[in-house]
Length: 254
Image (cartoon, rainbow, N blue to C red; front, side):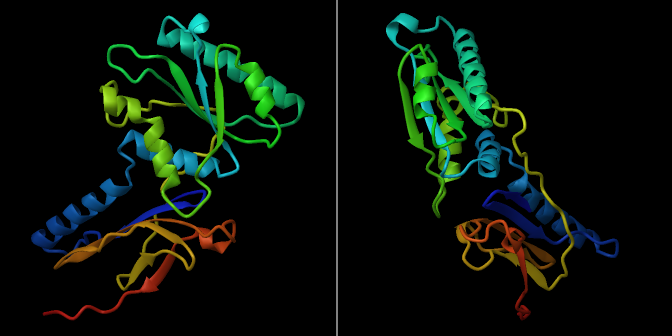
């Protein structure tokens, strides 16, 4: 299971045993490999989604920073340097108020032939720094919106895919390569592994919002189950953070 804030991704699968026949062992190994692939966060947007879910909520901000003609950077590297200067100034301003600065940002051009440079940034909100953000970005326009991940929907996936869209559209990065820049100190969830009885399965807790739960994949030697859901908005810091287990109905052999 991976728990990232309200987002939970999990698989359960049958593993091979020493007493298994060669066929059973091969089939179970194939099944466990397929299950693990679903939780390996192979794609860049999946890694970004989990990082977003672990660190940001609907109280935070989605910021877009653009350049006017007089200040358009000559290169992507120059744009990144300006972004670093902006973040340093923002961090200093917030530090004076005792407020942290957490972010994930990307620098985009959206053209294989060189488009107009700009930045998108997910930034922790403090409730009182819209004017500060606008005053510190001296090279163009600033657009600030609430981060749309506070409801029961696939908001984290949508934002993650948006932040990582340039490599897919322009073919500039490998499948799993990180294309964004995170701040230091962000929570980085890791999978938690535990053993389950053969008559148990995983399911979302009451009140959770199911994002994806395909039918279990089975063969004659076992099964694997995949589920992805958002924990309830209420009590999300309590016991519902843990995945629920329940007894499976006994299957009747044909």
